[in-house]
Image 1 (cartoon, rainbow, N blue to C red):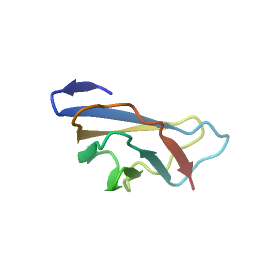
Image 2 (spheres, rainbow, N blue to C red):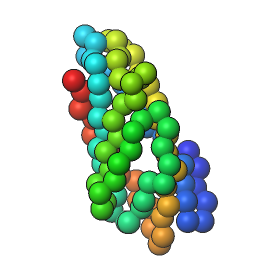
Image 3 (tube, one colour):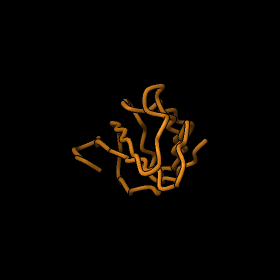
Image 4 (cartoon, helix red, strand yellow):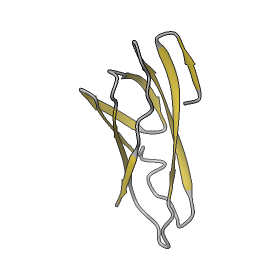
Length: 92
């Protein structure tokens, strides 16, 4: 979390290629526990279905060489609680 205010927050996720070879695409997923809703994203294509969030790379930041990284950000809303999820990343 980068910042939080009443009813909203800004998040940022860094995708790191820790492998020895390049990847051509990445997907990050997580599940919110408290009803948070993504309202805006940049540096990735975000979709949300219920509590499940999926962010896929943009055309310009999907290819990551060994040891390279990229970052995406988002704005989301929250109500009574805002517990942090645990993101998972898959690559192609």
